[in-house]
Each structure stands twice: as C-alpha cells, then as structure tokens.
Image (cartoon, rainbow, N blue to C red; front, side):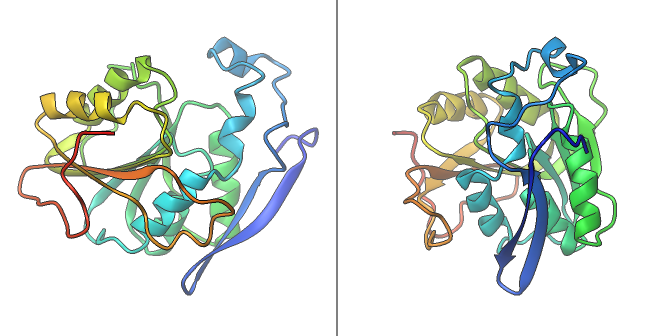
Length: 232
C-alpha cells in the first residue's frame, strides 16, 4: 500500500461476525503517480471513491449476510472495498469479486489477510469487455453501480452474460434515478424485478433513501417483503 495515502482501519459488526477493513481515510485521498488510473479513464476526482465504505455497501452486506448463499457461486460487481465479499468469505462461500479500479486488488488482499480468510478470487473488469472469462454465477450482487446513463445497458448486459439460467441478482441503489430504466433492460434478458426499502438501518448515520433491488429468472420467486414494482 502506498505510504502517501492516509488510511483508516475499522471493524464492522454483522451480528457475531466482525469484519476488519483497511480503507482510505476519506474520499479526498489520491495517488496515481504513473497515471495508471488516468489512462483507464479514472479522474483524480473519482479515484478515491472505490476506497471508502459507502452506505449502500453497508446495506448490501447486512442484507446478504442474512441471505441463503450456501452452495451458490456468487459474484460481486464493482466491489470497491468488497465488504460483502469479505463477509461471505468468512462463511466459506464461493465468492468472486470484480472492479475496474486498479487499486482494488491491493486492498482486497490486505483486508482478506486482516480477516484471516482464504484468498478471494478477483478480476479487474470493464463491463464492456466481451472477452471476460469469469464464467456463470448463481447470485450476482453489487451496490451503488448506476452512476451514469451509459452504465444502464453495460451493467445489465454484463450481468446477463455471467448469469446462470437460474440466477438471482441483488443490487442496492441509493436513489440515483436510474433503477427503472435498468430494470426494464433486465427484463429484456428474462429477469423479473422487485424492490424493497431496507429495514433496521440503525447502523447508518443517516436514513437510507434508496432501495434493495432484486432480479431473478429461472426457478425462483420473489421473497416476502419484496414488491413487484417498476415505478420510482
């Protein structure tokens, strides 16, 4: 880890499970001396966003921590600090993490070691990459992924490409205004859609205004508490 970055160590509790993470101290940190991120299209303003724990990632981790994942092959997209992957790894689930940022792998390795877990499979992935060899997954998860309109089709098509015929997709959206367009794109790939407001978010500093989005196809059903809905 580069010494020019100011870092933060914290422990996040999920019931009886503690997850230890090393993150950037805040979203003002930046270190790209060789322009590696810049050449990937990551500006100095967006460079730090991967490296802090956002409310959406906490919501996803709390949700997936109570979800049935045993025996499933799971993919976390745009993992950032990979909080959900670290939590699932503690349960010895089959988890693979992906992100586009060039520094994610360094933090993931460090945080896996902090939690004394087995190595987590990781690939740096561009959603537009047609040559990805990730394979197919039973569950795909992610949080706060729809920053731009151009991400809608890229993300939906990427998920479709890496979904088994029976697949569940769980995304946490903080309310960026693109979930309806995204859900319609997912429907073209054969996915049904439901959404819910997360309950019991007292672990967050502020009320969460977003939704947990769930997509599924194949031999699956919407669980109790989820509402089939494509309205905002």
